[in-house]
Amino acid sequence: MRVVLRLLAGPAGALLLAFVLAALAMLIAGVNPVDGFYWLLRGSLGGRRPIAETLVQTTALLFPALGVSLAFRAGLFNIGAEGQLLMGGLLAGAVGAHFAGPQWMTVFVLLLLGMVGGGIWGGIAGWLRARFNASEIISTLMLNFVALSLTGYLVAGPLKSPLASGAETAPLLPNNWLPAFPTIFGISFGDTRLTISILIAIATALVIRFVFTRTVFGYELRAAGEAPEAARRSGINMPRMTLIALTLSGAVAGLGGAAIVTGVLHRFNTSLSPGYGYTAIAVALVGDLNPLWVCVAAFGFGILEAGGLMMQANAGVPKDAIRVIEGLIILVLAARRYFASRATAPI
Image 1 (cartoon, helix red, strand yellow):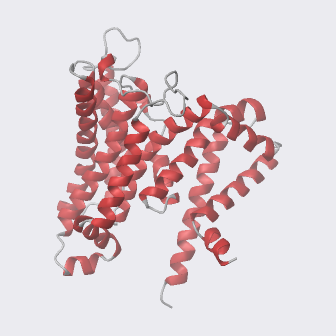
Image 2 (cartoon, rainbow, N blue to C red):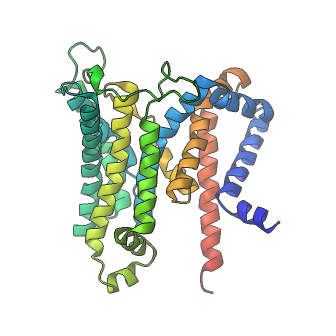
Image 3 (cartoon, rainbow, N blue to C red):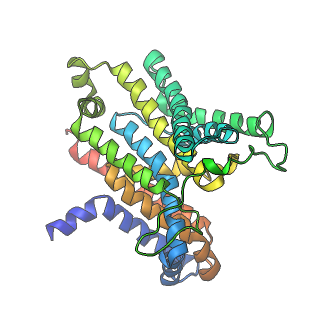
């Protein structure tokens, strides 16, 4: 009984409450919640192709969510994963259209460039915070709009493919594409959009967890977030830690942008992200900022993203209802954190 109560008080309980509220919203809209959730699950887990698409969406959310959680653990609110995702994707797309070489090398270089693009974008906010004590919430949020405008201008102007009718870069050379997901138990995903980027994302989560729990840098990072005054008194250079944390946070998000370009789109355009960077904030919070739980949370949100279309087509639930469910999750989590802080605050 105690275990059940503990689960309900944690992120799992918040998720359960959010889905109950979503079911009530469906009832009010005249839709049977059972039908709605059935088609949601069938569209996301009901076969090889739906599962592959769910994992594609999971990957797109996992990279920026890991970046956001890394900054949060350092006590920094990185709201700019969307812009960092775009800048990483832009750099990989611009270079990948012309860079030739062995596949393992070119893909590695393009992913690295994605990290550089996102890292620079996150580093700008880190520098502003470290040098001028500027709020990283405001700066990262504003940098999202700068990134969107800048990438829009570049792909509609200097970087626009002469053969494309829309605003986008030239397609990547086929040798620069991420390899397809390997065949497992005789099941091939070669005809889907799933690539090895999901494995790279999980490996990134494991590396971040290792850094958090087994390295001096991870200890200092967590100390800066959990007890900044004690960290300062113990000799940790807080401005330097701020700069590093936001740069690394942006780099992980930028890696996600490069993974989408090299694995899914095979070119860059501004529709690369329908808002993955913003949804990633909710994913990181649902995962309680723990890299492994963030993987689980990203899979849950991947189900919502992938199954939304079938739920709309067969149950009559608008795909925008997915945004409502995600909003309810954020609302419930925010309320949970608020009441938790009230309960522990001194009287």
